[in-house]
Length: 314
Image (tube, rainbow, N blue to C red; front, side, top):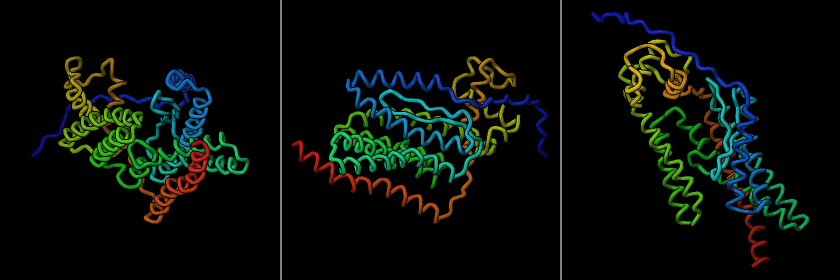
């Protein structure tokens, strides 16, 4: 007969969700982005246009996340990489996530097409170039690669809760970006691919940790609030051992350390956010058609005018 576990497990620490948007950090990241971009490009007009395009793109994500009740929604500009919006929510659905993903690139694609149509009407080459840049940045984001919006949409629709497939998808995306960047001499794309390769090691480490935790039969597709105290301290123990923190913290001693806030967040990151599958097969087909149309049709629309401009100045 199996003996009951009479070990006392202290209450797991609370994780205080960030509830406010940190405007100062957003402005600081924007300032650093502008500074480095200016030193590389030294063209104020191009710099202003790129920042405007990225801002409109990320505002789409930002507004959608706010509408769906995300907490601590923040926008950050990453020098040489782009920008991103972060936020927290315990439970999300496929439909919410798909809308958040598409809310970034689709407005930019529509704006780009509108600017090009206007430029054709008045014959303004500068406006046309601005429209092409809107299309370029947003269509690149629709490519089905991790972590671009197109890749996030594919992940959301088909394997959002499957860590192994996500890892394979990331590796494939990194290889494609690096090879394409070198082949087409788009070295910024290759650099971005190498930057994303850092996530491969992180995901591998996380996968190994989850494998160790699986022997305890703790369900990992859940929220932090759903963890029992025993489950928290069990995951914490394995995290401390795998992170080599046992030199500073005794993993078998169930006492909060001075680093407990950070450890609690790491324990939460081991969990897989539950995603409600609320999109039917018809809905998935519709979203895929919308994604494909947003990716292909603007290119077919803009290419003839782009070719005309190139011939004009050649």
